[in-house]
Structure formats: C-alpha cells, structure tokens
Amino acid sequence: MATINRSVIMKSLPQGAPRPDDFEIKTSELPAITNGQMLLKTRWLTLDPYMRSGFMADPNNVGRCVIGGTVSEVIESRVPGWQPGDLVVGYYGWQEYSIGTPEDLQWNHPDMPIEKWDERLGPASTAVGVLGMTGYTAYEGLINVARVAPGDTVVVSAASGAVGQVVGQIAKIKGATAVGIAGGPEKCRYCVETLGFDACVDYKAGNLPADLAAAVPAGIDIYFENVGGDVLEAVIPLLNPGARVPICGFVAHYNDTPEQRRQTPLQRLKAEGLKVLGKDGSTEGFAFFGFTGLSARHPQAEQALQEMSGWIKAGKLKYRESITEGLSSAPDAFIGMLAGRNFGKTMVKISGQGE
Ligand SMILES: NC(=O)c1ccc[n+]([C@@H]2O[C@H](COP(=O)([O-])OP(=O)(O)OC[C@H]3O[C@@H](n4cnc5c(N)ncnc54)[C@H](OP(=O)(O)O)[C@@H]3O)[C@@H](O)[C@H]2O)c1
Image 1 (spheres, rainbow, N blue to C red):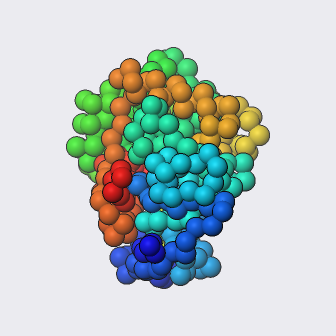
Image 2: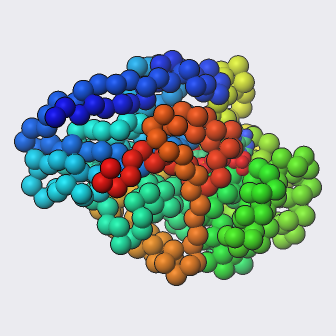
Image 3: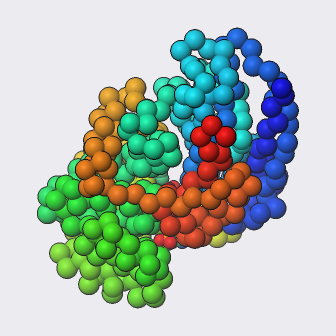
C-alpha cells in the first residue's frame, strides 16, 4: 500500500520573525522501499533555534522540507539488523514519514550516522532533547568548556529552556551557585522551586541590571550565553576577572533583519576588550565554540549520555518538555519558541507508538 507523506516546506524566506504563511504543508506519495532501505514513521520532532539562524536564512532552502532532529519508528525494513519497531535517532526533518538508510546522518554530520535509541536510557523524546543535542550542549559547555568548579557562580540565560534548564541543574550537581535569567515570573519560579536554582531573574520585569547584580553578590564566574542582546549587556559589568563565557547561541538575534543587525554579540565582547578564543581549547578568557551534537560513537558523548541518564533516574536532573501534537502544529510551535512561548524543550509529537 502506498504511503502518503505530509511534510512542512519553507514556502518563503522569513523576513524578521517567521510567520505561519512562510510555511506550507505538502502531501506526496512515497515509493515502495527497496533493498537497503527502511520506511520510517516520525514519532518526535525537535524544534530548535538553529533552524532559524541556519536553514531559514538561506534562500536556497525555499521549497525544501524544513530540517530537524527526529525519532522515528521503523515500519518496514529491507536492511539487515534494523527491525520494525526499532527507534531511529535521525535528522529526517519536519515530515511524517521518510525513507532511510543506515548511512543517513544525524545533524548532517559526516561522523554521526543514525542510531538506534535504547529506551532504557530514557523515553523516546529525550533522545533529541535532554539526552540528545540540547542536553549534551549544556553538559559539554559547562563541564568541558567552562570547566565548572565548586563555588563558581554560574549565570545562564534562557534558563528555563532546553539548554538552560540543564545548565543550571548541572551547575548545582557540580557544587556551583546557579542563577538563571528567564522571561516571566512563572519560568523563574520553576527554575528555583522545581529545578533547584539558587535564584532566577526575570529580564522582562524591566530592571535587569540591578536585579541581576543583586542576585550575584560575588559576581559571575561563568556566564553560559544563550541569548545576546540586552541580557548580555547586563551580564558584562558583573563578570569577575578571568570569567569563562561559553558562547552557546544568540537567540535574541536570530530574527534580526539586515537593517537591525548592528554589532554581533561577539563583536560586542571584543569591543569591550574581552578576548574571544577559538575552538582550540585555550582556557584563558572567553571561549567561542560550536557543538555538533550527540553520538554514542563519540566516547565523550557516550559518557555524557550515561551520566545524564543516571542523573535523571536518580532524580538529580529534571526536564520539562513543551509539547504540541501533530505535524501541522510545528510552524506555530517554532514561531512561539523563538518568541519565548515555549516552557521547556520544544517538541512536536508527530505520532504515537505503533499508530
Ligand atoms: N552551540 C550549540 O550547539 C547549540 C545547541 C543548542 C542550542 N544552542 C543555542 O542555545 C540557545 C538556547 O536554545 P534552546 O534550544 O535551549 O532554546 P530554548 O531556550 O528552549 O528556547 C528559546 C528561548 O529563548 C528565549 N528568548 C527568545 N528571545 C529572547 C530575547 N530577545 N531575549 C532573551 N531571551 C530570549 C526565550 O526564553 P524566555 O521566555 O526566557 O525569554 C525562549 O524560550 C539558542 O541561542 C540556541 O541557538 C546552541
């Protein structure tokens, strides 16, 4: 029987914040699979800010299915070793079905072929969330790049979001003081009361520089940068000498139009006379790094995966997901995430198990 696939296409290049009519749903019929192929049904799709700063900033992608990390179920397989019911962590984008091969890659990274997900580590959604790219980003940035140590004061922006919520909790696990910056009292309360941050400052309350200064009486040793913009401006005067600033992303800038794009946050840091370092592992001053994601084939990532799965099971690491249902919810959920309407890791449940 033919498989009817629905996918979300980027119809036009967003100008500023994406709008619903920048996207459209297309229906197509998938061919029958041949030897070496699997028919995959998407269960979970993760929505992440990089889709706006990368894919949706490139005119060549107009008319293409939007990229994205996925967890899919094998429905039919003509590949030895891959069985119906297996869960596949891949990069099959905003669509309900795909035809996969074992050579397909996660994150388009040549080093990271698709993997089977072992649900003993965590529920399927976590494979592309807290136990996937975003959780690993937090782990890698705080532990291996910023080298968090007991007694450090760690500030993290977008604190209740996918990366931020994990950063603050790992800071606590490692004996540091964790201070979040988030949009609104509910998100701040969540960071403190549920996740165990020491404090969280609501940047939307209108008094960020003073409120943040009051929350970090000993200054800031590590600023885990997710945002840029006014939040970064409030942080800069509070950084202690020798502070480490792992730069993870600048979500406040991803919707900037060319006219709005003045100084990038990196240029801003350099203008302050602060040294921005490359990926070469130098430990002095500021570090700029990019992550590739999570693959069990990378020993460091495997260690992070096992450790974080253990923390979740031990109740030391909590996570919150912001879930919408069905492929057609993806554009609004994505637009909302960039505007802060998500509360936790933004996920779309495309289909349920065995549906
Ligand atoms: N380097 C890497 O490999 C890597 C990997 C994953 C993520 N990232 C980066 O990490 C950052 C966070 O990503 P995420 O997946 O964890 O997203 P997220 O925090 O779950 O969602 C985005 C959040 O950004 C905040 N935000 C949006 N506009 C803002 C503004 N103008 N000022 C302050 N906050 C704003 C909103 O939270 P509030 O409601 O609190 O404002 C929103 O909920 C992004 O910059 C992303 O690009 C980098």
